[in-house]
Length: 467
Image (cartoon, rainbow, N blue to C red; front, side, top):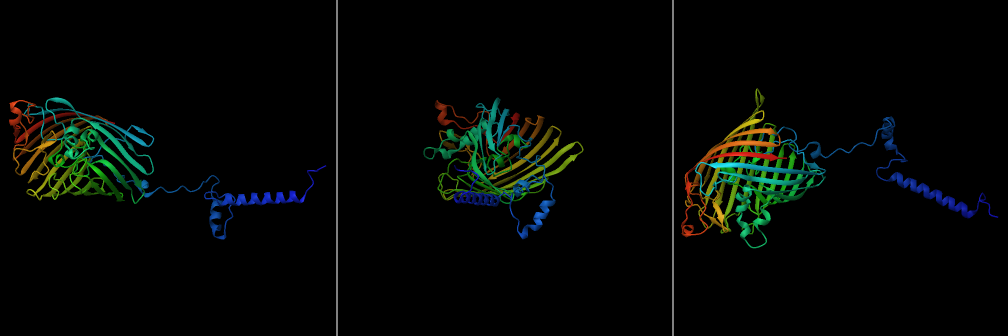
């Protein structure tokens, strides 16, 4: 009979092989990254081992230091809520995991003192209807903010503001498979990646809000409700690629490659280029410079547009007496349009804005001036059947005006505004009593001449809900 307590050569060999296997497995586990159990220290580790022995019993492994752009996020070293062109609300309440949602409803009542018969307030991009309660802009969006790497956003929009901007984009008439109906209701749609380089590096591609100009496309973010000529005559959106680099916490550099000047498509076979530099040396001072170059004339492939926008903002009072904030914004633009098939010319202008905030109220006064030698940038009459309607006077344009705006915030999520604006120009440019819309049919349709005047006065009431 076999006795289990008896040993045999085969049994001894099996036990020896098992012991060797267990020893090798233990050494392999000890050598794996992050597993220090059972590791044998070398002579060079003696000091570290002594320190570990002296450490508290519950001390775990040292936490990995976060990247520089996480420890010192861009522009996180100051309070920037006073800036023009930036949302002044607290952080959004609509956050779900890595996604931040947004909702905006912008309602207005516009009154143009000329009382145009067609209710069309021209020119302008905001509040373009007379004697009507209108929906200027409504948008819903989602932005990826909580993932390490992927970034992007999708914002859908509708309203009168969409018709005055994206609705006038004529590059959609060049060939097929590009249409206003497909794109004008998308305010932003971009996908990209964030890199932990310096204080942050972002690369995004898609439909993006413009980098040219001080003011934001969203009126709620601006000190005034309506825009100065400088903003109305420069782009509000681009289709292309944007690279953002933050070399330091207070410095941002951007490089853009886009299809064209506020266009979904492009007129010619060359992409446009742009750059932006923004420096915030202190929380009460900021400087911004941007530049654009591209071929923008529809029928002139050799035309070249060069444009530069520059601004400085200064908060000269902060929590002084009953004044919470008082700030100035100065903008200066200069550009040149070279044409091979028509006259070339200069364009440019300036605006100065002052804002004083007291509690839930704010008062903003703005003055602006713009010159366009060849009407390269000023808004032409609204498009009809895909064809631009040129102004009756094609000479140099010189215009300016002022606006006064009173803001009231009953809640951080609700803004109420009252604004009065006056404008004037050297040529007939603003809607008159007869309006600018030709009859749909009849003998007068072919002979209609838009009723344009040299001055303009407007009054706007606005309520904006934004979450």
